[in-house]
Image (cartoon, rainbow, N blue to C red):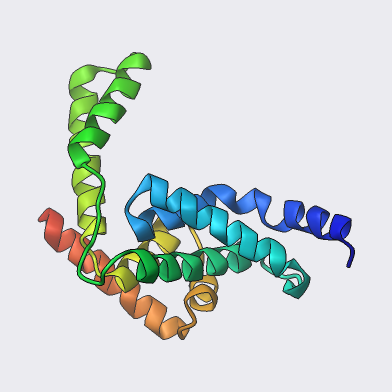
Amino acid sequence: MDRGDNRTRFANVVIPHLDDAYGLARWVTGNRADAEDVVQEACLRAFRGIDGFSGGNGRAWVLTIVRNTAYDWLRKNRSATVIHVDDLEAIERMQLADDAAAGDNPEAALIARADEAKLEAAIASLPALFRETLVLRDVQGLDYREIATITGVPIGTVMSRLARARRRVIETLGVEK
């Protein structure tokens, strides 16, 4: 293919999934700036490899590249024992400011943001394999087969990881069944 065809193909296959790519990178890296770096590198990889895309599920193809890029980036830039999570209080303040600007009830917004922050913290505390499976299923809305393709594991493993991730989040939040 010529370069123009590759650009068109990239625009059709990759660009529609950039929000999902950023969301996955954000959850894997735990940091907005790092996620942006990962997505930028993943886009470069996707553009270089667009000739290898044989059709099918473009979203799964893009998210596979993002996942692999994120783990490569983490290996290169962070020690295995360091896990970075954005300052949850700063996130709460920013989200409260957004809600106030929208005219929401401040008390209800505060309660909702506190619950959201607890949920984000519970998800962030999961081991990486459980976290990525939970995010791909419950945040990105992918089905088991797509997650299996992206992560390179059998569907049964996806189901097991998802169940364990959900159980750990519920335990962390202290939610009654």
